[in-house]
Figure 1 (tube, rainbow, N blue to C red):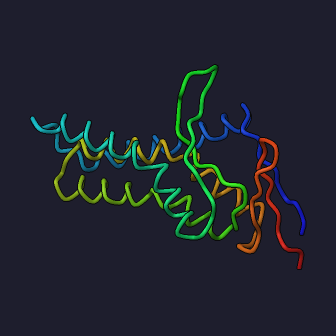
Figure 2: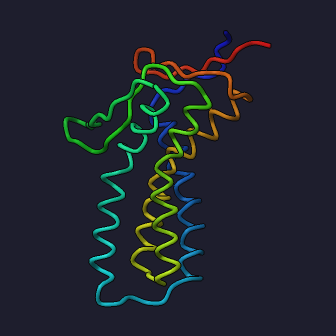
Figure 3: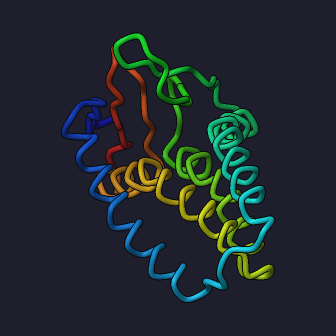
Amino acid sequence: MKQVATVRLDSKYAVRVIALGAVLTLAVVAQGLLISGGFSASDGFYYLFATALAIVLHEPLHTVAMKLLRVKAKVSLVKAHGVPIALATAYSKIGVRDYVIATLAPQAISALLLSLALSLRSLALFLSYAIHVVSSSCDFYNILFTLIKAKTLSGFWIAEGGEYKLYINEA
């Protein structure tokens, strides 16, 4: 086994994820301009309901996918200076293939929101889709990072002392 990457969830990591989020925001706004049909009276309700549902289901969908793939995982609360700021899915070991599948699982929410937004021509549902895609930039960054560093699906991530280490089988 050869270690090919280490990820520490620090400020450098956050800047990379935010940069990807900015690029995704521009792409999603461009899409929104193409489908915008204006706001209707019920759009406020749709927006609040769809966005809240996406937020509540995102991390549990990672966990469900991991459990279906037989990876031990749990959802935990992330705090900054004692204040809860996010939910995160934690695991001790996961294969690269399973990691990619589990990380993409919540994009089923994005697909559903986009399908509804397009079929109903709802700007509110499109905005919910946009928020979900942009807030998933961390997931997209992690998949790209993993695939670029591993160059194979036969490796695995291991959580060790606050860091995640990527190992691959040497050929």
